[in-house]
Length: 217
Figure (spheres, rainbow, N blue to C red):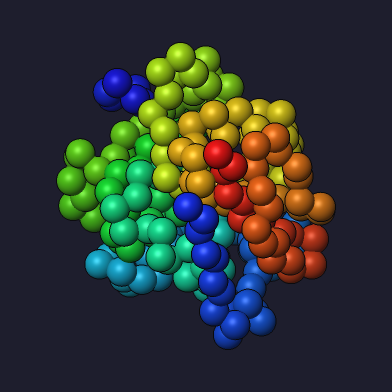
């Protein structure tokens, strides 16, 4: 069981959001100096305007307007989708996906405190237990545990820390993506090339980028 508990895709973007798209994450110049625990809001869907807690400790969750822009870009793929939220932090991306109709999200996070925050957020939002699973550990450990019997996902969301970007580790996630599935990566610099993935779109803001890929096959 997953976790410690247990054709072509058309990508469209809302031009209004594209013009102001911005990613706030690790290792970037931004005005977000707060490092203690805080809150962010779900931007849309059934849980719109509900607060979720963030771990702090140097993690900079993607801002609300930026998440809204991101999920508008993949909105057609969310209803009924199974999702892997890697480097989950507060779980904001996965919870946003559930709010927009995703069937189930698996959260991968190596920090115990962050996993506890995600669990608490799910409880506070009254999310059904069968909609979530949790893996406490790194992406490498997740791969080693499930590579022989992968639970394939429709969408993978990867928002790794910029100050320690490990593309070799990130590439392991593609093993868990369904053919024609969508892979979303937040990253600095040029879009990485991954075997078996087609780059569909890259949105750039200063040194931050958001790339959307489709799995071939």
